[in-house]
View 1 (cartoon, rainbow, N blue to C red):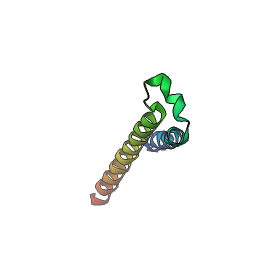
View 2: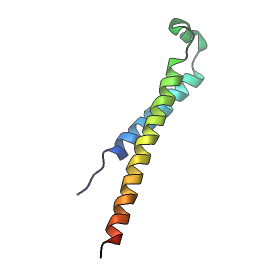
View 3: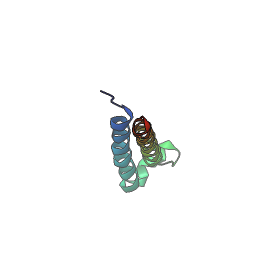
View 4: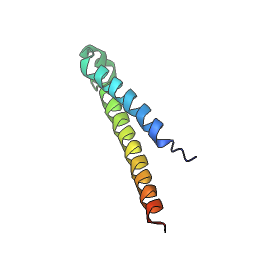
Length: 74
Protein backbone atom coordinates (compact mmCIF):
# COMPACT_ATOMS: atom_id res chain seq x y z
CA UNK A 1 0.00 0.00 0.00
CA UNK A 2 1.49 3.31 -1.11
CA UNK A 3 0.11 6.20 0.96
CA UNK A 4 1.38 9.69 0.25
CA UNK A 5 1.20 11.91 3.33
CA UNK A 6 1.22 15.04 1.18
CA UNK A 7 -2.49 14.60 0.33
CA UNK A 8 -3.89 14.84 3.88
CA UNK A 9 -1.19 17.31 4.94
CA UNK A 10 -1.95 19.56 1.97
CA UNK A 11 -5.68 19.33 2.65
CA UNK A 12 -5.16 20.18 6.32
CA UNK A 13 -3.05 23.22 5.55
CA UNK A 14 -5.53 24.36 2.89
CA UNK A 15 -8.45 24.18 5.32
CA UNK A 16 -6.58 26.00 8.09
CA UNK A 17 -5.28 28.54 5.58
CA UNK A 18 -8.77 29.33 4.32
CA UNK A 19 -10.12 29.67 7.86
CA UNK A 20 -7.25 31.94 8.95
CA UNK A 21 -7.47 34.04 5.77
CA UNK A 22 -11.20 34.56 6.20
CA UNK A 23 -10.67 35.46 9.84
CA UNK A 24 -8.02 37.98 8.80
CA UNK A 25 -10.26 39.50 6.15
CA UNK A 26 -13.35 39.90 8.30
CA UNK A 27 -11.84 40.67 11.72
CA UNK A 28 -11.69 44.04 13.39
CA UNK A 29 -8.79 46.19 12.19
CA UNK A 30 -8.22 47.54 15.71
CA UNK A 31 -6.84 44.10 16.59
CA UNK A 32 -3.90 44.74 14.22
CA UNK A 33 -2.65 47.75 16.19
CA UNK A 34 -0.61 45.49 18.48
CA UNK A 35 1.24 43.95 15.53
CA UNK A 36 2.41 47.20 13.91
CA UNK A 37 -0.81 47.39 11.83
CA UNK A 38 0.05 44.19 9.99
CA UNK A 39 -2.80 41.76 9.50
CA UNK A 40 -0.89 38.69 10.69
CA UNK A 41 -3.88 36.35 10.37
CA UNK A 42 -4.38 37.28 6.73
CA UNK A 43 -0.74 36.86 5.74
CA UNK A 44 -0.20 33.59 7.62
CA UNK A 45 -3.49 32.27 6.27
CA UNK A 46 -2.39 33.00 2.72
CA UNK A 47 0.99 31.40 3.39
CA UNK A 48 -0.63 28.26 4.84
CA UNK A 49 -3.02 28.10 1.88
CA UNK A 50 -0.12 28.35 -0.56
CA UNK A 51 1.83 25.66 1.30
CA UNK A 52 -1.20 23.36 1.29
CA UNK A 53 -1.72 23.87 -2.44
CA UNK A 54 1.95 23.13 -3.12
CA UNK A 55 1.84 19.93 -1.07
CA UNK A 56 -1.32 18.82 -2.85
CA UNK A 57 0.20 19.67 -6.25
CA UNK A 58 3.42 17.74 -5.55
CA UNK A 59 1.45 14.70 -4.37
CA UNK A 60 -0.73 14.83 -7.48
CA UNK A 61 2.32 15.19 -9.75
CA UNK A 62 4.10 12.23 -8.13
CA UNK A 63 0.95 10.11 -8.31
CA UNK A 64 0.52 10.93 -11.98
CA UNK A 65 4.16 10.10 -12.74
CA UNK A 66 3.85 6.76 -10.92
CA UNK A 67 0.73 5.84 -12.92
CA UNK A 68 2.54 6.70 -16.17
CA UNK A 69 5.55 4.61 -15.15
CA UNK A 70 3.34 1.62 -14.30
CA UNK A 71 1.39 1.95 -17.54
CA UNK A 72 4.60 1.90 -19.63
CA UNK A 73 5.81 -1.41 -18.18
CA UNK A 74 5.54 -4.29 -20.65
